[in-house]
Length: 72
Image (cartoon, rainbow, N blue to C red; front, top):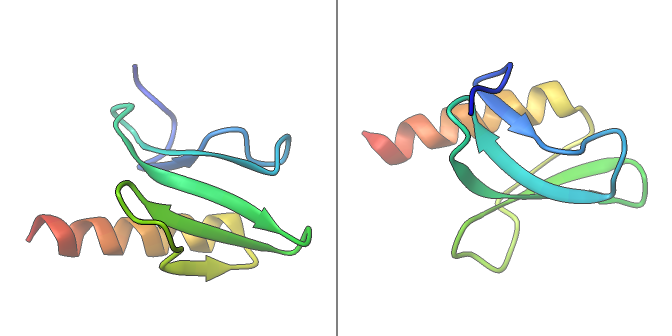
């Protein structure tokens, strides 16, 4: 499954929560919309969000940076 972006918030702008997937379709965590204003990212296996941002595009960039650091 090929997705359009390096990091994808599946269902963003339609749902209040969903999976976060890489471009290859690997699920790496979940996202949640908080009070209609902030997006949280929680990695797989964690129970608390580690990143929060009001903008989907910027959260995706930050998740990508986090993922690169995890792979290093």
